[in-house]
Image (cartoon, rainbow, N blue to C red; front, side, top):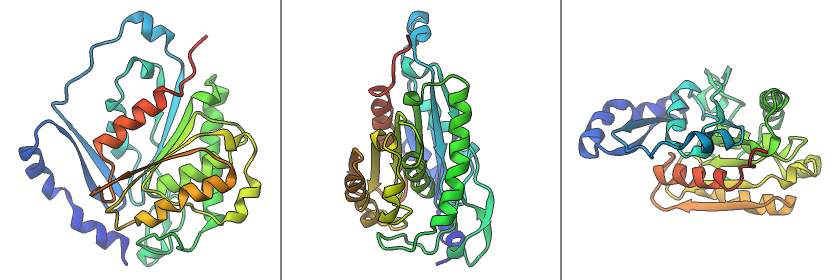
Length: 269
């Protein structure tokens, strides 16, 4: 199946009609394996006090986008995290390089690693060598932030679809325990033989896995294969299934992510 052609069915021509029918909402519009977030007349929380701001721990959230997307297109996500705990959070939305993608007949598009087929199933071929190269780049981003003074326990890697698969790989292969990894509509991008290469500290990093039960791009079965894999590796995983949700991220998922990260942030000393 042509990834790019598939995406053309989800263009922004539907955006205006959705805004008219639901003017106070967070809307997710799919572009290929991608999401655009539209924020419109959402009420803001009350401002936090200077005291609470100064005591908020320094943290880092790295967001990895899906196939064919870009980092800047996902930046509105951070505007939803308004709690005082995120006042000292640095957000990063890198863009994947353009690479040939097998499921797109070898055409070049923003892609962290190669994908053999769409839809992705629990048994889809793994492009492990490609994934490991992408992991090195993610680790470099994390290392830079840790070197700048951020506690690794306050580093959170999140990703959607292909970015979710890369999130999982990056967290499980990082040499230190991180604050957490959040996988949205992702999959396990390598075989179980890779488990023996996971550092012991990496196994202590908690994983949040969210997946729509109506996902026809990365099938729900691919998401369901995650928790058993992680259990085998000795990694804690909280799996959340969303009935009726397709290949997208919902407001409900992001609200839960905010609370999930908040409970894991280390206080500043």
